[in-house]
Length: 422
Image (cartoon, rainbow, N blue to C red):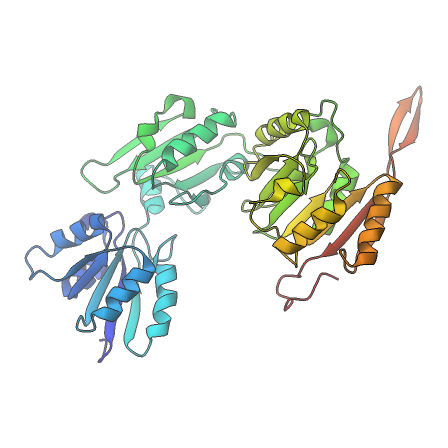
């Protein structure tokens, strides 16, 4: 019972056919006096109510406009908001339920779960979904190649214009024709279709429209660390941050799961690749002015399937214009523009976490000027000197590398009430 308040039911209708709906969802549709949802969902609900008196219908899926409809129709005592799949699984119910909390005095909200397309596809294929990674590409640009590369089983929620074609294009580009892609479309409807094959065998039309895909990778990269040895990178004649220095620098970066990273003077992309591999939702903007280095960057992004990297060709700080604000920045090369780069970074995000590598004493001098001016507040300076063994006859001799200064400053510690990193 909803007492004297409006009752708003957020109804997960599964894939949309009556057979895929729960009895609770069907009951909410039959008992409502108003329905809101995308056209496909309204059509499905209307079929269920075909022997009942018609009720007002509003074709809408934007949460703000749905809220306005509810507010403007207080006479509708029992409203059903129709949502595809399950209300707790990549659903518009999340945002809408938050907004409806503000209407608590006039509205009572209940969520009715449904069967998601991932669950349905797994059942159709006779497998489980609990052991698979899940990424939604529905209406958003999301990194997923790295996830597929690291997991034996990945589910991709497709939908929206071009999402399926983009999935196949990216799999082909990153050399992943060894994986098997199984795509389910129009699940639960009479025209349900499931196709299977390697990316090179499938057509964009196979993944068009409302689809879900399961990707099986027989040879996933099971390394649990983002660190890569120097020898694995494609290098050419471009300088590269050595792995010992990368390890300390990335530790000082203190990356978070939703980090937006600028790698300025990215070179071969060793820092960009390891930063991107630190988390599936991390976005890295690799800024490089040299054409040869930018080409190596592209090759290494492709080799390590680090689709979280966006390559920006140009010189900082001008090349940073138009990029989203960074949460973290690594400066491996500044071309003498360190002060201007720091100014732009701080303008974009005063709390940005900055890590700088300095080899030459001139760069160290620039850094100390920045510390003195307050551009690098409470900077921590670490010098790293590493040596590697080499075989000389019957002996192992140590060969020293150039000492590197690692300077870190700024950034807010997560969950620490805005306090900076200590």
